[in-house]
Length: 221
Image (cartoon, rainbow, N blue to C red; front, side):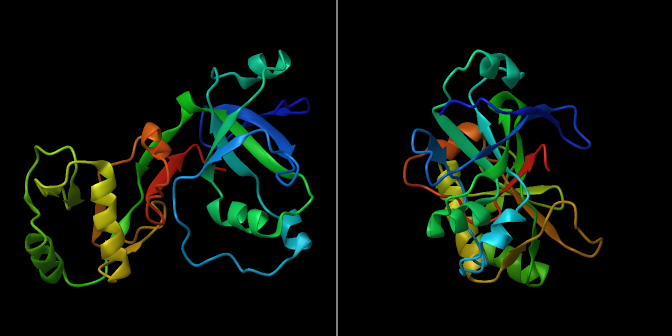
């Protein structure tokens, strides 16, 4: 994929800049799109081009220098894009294969910051801690893979990868032990838990998607 028409894009509350352009995903087949999360509460599955036209920009990262205009002015081909924000919208676009160019913002992989997406405990704290213990999680600050509650980390020595940890998160969500909550919408009364943050390179495991709302990625539209 070669991009010829673009403008510099500055994010609010961030020093990061990228470019804004448009892509028709129904006709652009020469770029690989990397997804990293399952979707939750599926986007309304009704074909509606007018809704698509109102979509805010999708945000992608790519392997490039921080100033993407340098490579694009030289017409360097982009072969891979990692979707950072907009999984529901992208799913909808794929479902109906709209022949329409939508706005996208591209940034360098080097400018991506990934934090754990907050979750709040949906049961009382004792019930949740008891469930952790029953699942072989114990207080520990030494493991690379952990669950953190009120500055206390819990880990399971049998969990040896980020994928196993987030498979456990998926079970917690499916059994209503936790509810994802945006990092900028936390209430003082919420009992928040976090998981080991996922690294961008860990998005690329073939045929694996993390559970919904696992990553809080900056910069944000």
